[in-house]
Length: 105
Image (spheres, rainbow, N blue to C red):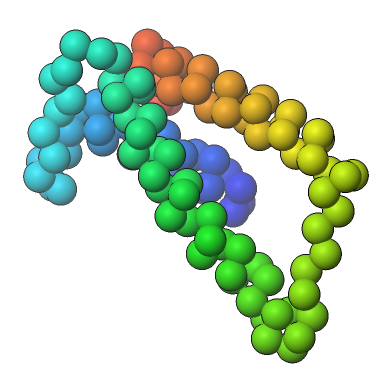
């Protein structure tokens, strides 16, 4: 249920950006670019802001006890980079799909 809510709500900010929201006082996007491309910078800023917060929430309790996280960079760098690239490409495609097919699919 949690994953469904999390994944289902991923495209809500893009939809609000594209169509606007009278409730939030947001005007609809009126630029010449596709809304998905114009939305990417704010998505990147959101990731940059939230990543340290999530790191602190995940590792904070252990670090307070004096247990530092071990990063096995040699083992996980390539799989991690590939996973991030595939997720990024999939999310980028999902943004375009939402523009043309809507949120209901």
